[in-house]
Image (cartoon, rainbow, N blue to C red; front, top):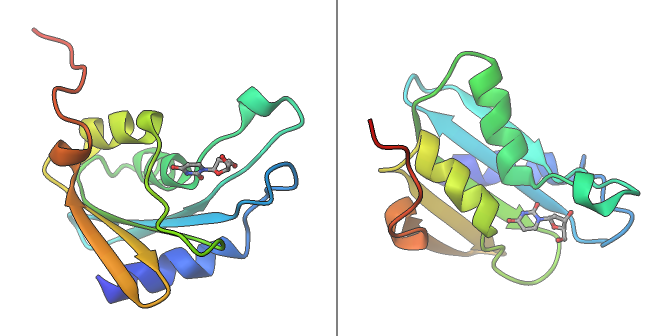
Length: 125
Ligand code: THU
């Protein structure tokens, strides 16, 4: 857990957030042990902004990893960076049984994905 949080902190430096000045970093742990990091990337067309969590998960998927176990999230502000609704939905897709760690300084809160997004949307066969 602490290593994953440290990776998320490393990703913070790459945050591109000139509009909100709210830097976020994330790191996702895949079942094969690989780790992918992400930062939030904003855009002058605000809706084109993407969160750090989704960048990290999409990097994993685009490198062939679909089975994720945990994600750590940190931000520059002095608060616990709870993931937004869209990121929770993507977590439900790739890590439904996973753990979510949000860290503020030395404090860490831990959640299961299913408690952050109960009754998530999914396609029935
Ligand atoms: N942000 C994230 O990166 N993750 C979240 O879960 C919530 C919000 C980013 C998006 C935007 O760049 C900034 O934080 C302010 O909303």
